[in-house]
Image (tube, helix red, strand yellow):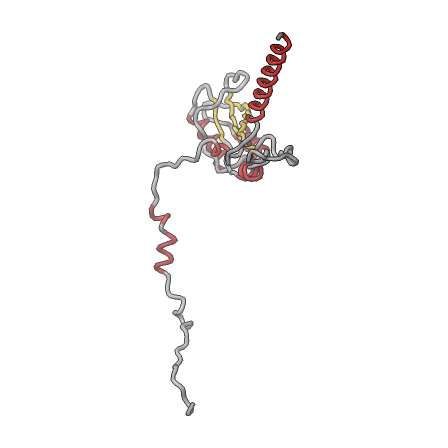
Length: 219
């Protein structure tokens, strides 16, 4: 009787372990049509401290700022912030003038950075985001059998990696671009008006020559 009880207990333990392992295995399978591997957006802040005065940013400091922007290859998707303890409008105007050469508008609410800003100086911050898909490509299950109709581990890697590589502003993967609220009807309908107002292509001596369908010459 004792051996029977022991065998029954061992069978119950083995069954529970098997169910537990099966449950753990199910969490690793993707039976939906959604890709598990999604783009991840990371942000890095680059800082440059510049000397300022009552009239704004001196010309040599403006040259330093322009050279720094050139080194960073500043472009669309980058965000430029100003951390100025004095919040000088003249400084903001000078920095904006340099950033405008790269098509960048100064952003509000500068992020918190390490280090103390010395008196008489400002800090220009460039926030740059990058996107990538971790774990791709994944061919770990190339010999696996999908008896449960699961999608492969590499499912979605190609599409999501291409989107992460081609998106101009990685921040748009987190939150779409917002409009300015301005509606420019004339510019949106310019192509339609140009098409409607264009002269027919047959004008100017290029019209199709008229011919008669009646037979001549006794034919």
